[in-house]
Length: 296
Ligand SMILES: Nc1ncnc2c1ncn2[C@@H]1O[C@H](COP(=O)(O)OP(=O)(O)OP(=O)(O)O)[C@@H](O)[C@H]1O
Ligand SMILES: [Mg+2]
Image (cartoon, rainbow, N blue to C red; front, top):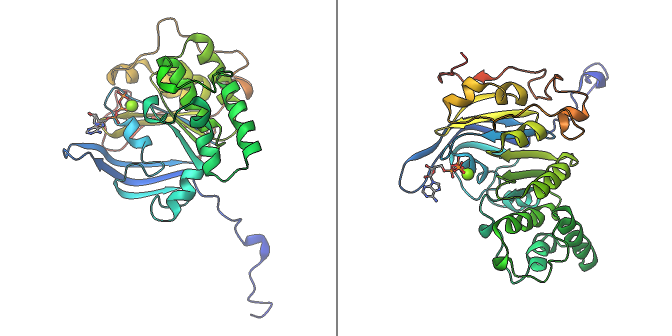
């Protein structure tokens, strides 16, 4: 190549950072054939905190179970630039940690310590590092001292906290949480919110706890009947009472947007700041083409 034909280095694009999640026309049905995910198109950039809200049966958990290949639908899906199949599945599972909606699905060993150590051990970490991570993860969820207990003897909220610890101990790049505050008492809920707010990883949180979505997430997706019906800045989607009501959701009575020190919005200096969004700027909740939104 002559010097004349060599590209100007200033015009060479920087290496692209793959999106955390890139779905195109993702469809899924359980074996009974009922469509649960209907042509989901979605991009979540690395570093985003995204809430997935929607009524019971909307398909939130089903969508999350696609993010590390537990379920496989049709259409295109890439996680951190990789297809969740074949040899890349293992890589994805080492980088994407999912806390299941039902903690019973996550806890299957003879003691809490074994359950929490399972992921870090599988990652090939040495025993000292595994022990350190187990200790830190249990402290993060306020369950230190429970190492020797059998998970099936714990309460529902305690199981949820241990299930969350199993994933925190892996320090995933993408943290996927399905109803993380379900069954937690207020102190445990607050502790978890503060821990999550302090993690600068990609967070994808399916929740009916809309104040948690507001506090932790920059962006909210509203899913109903397997379709994304709204996608926008968290404050836009979550404070739209008409939109929420049309999809069987509502903020709890007396909810006022928090202005305390927790949460990405507050850390950036107030709730009126623009959403960090791969489309740039702070988009309004946008109706997805072909889907009627009550907000127009
Ligand atoms: N294992 C399964 N087999 C068959 N159908 C299922 C299965 N799991 C879920 N479904 C169906 O798929 C639909 C979506 O379920 P999903 O659990 O994804 O909803 P969700 O939005 O997470 O609801 P929730 O708010 O209650 O957690 C529901 O109608 C449900 O009946
Ligand atoms: Mg669910």
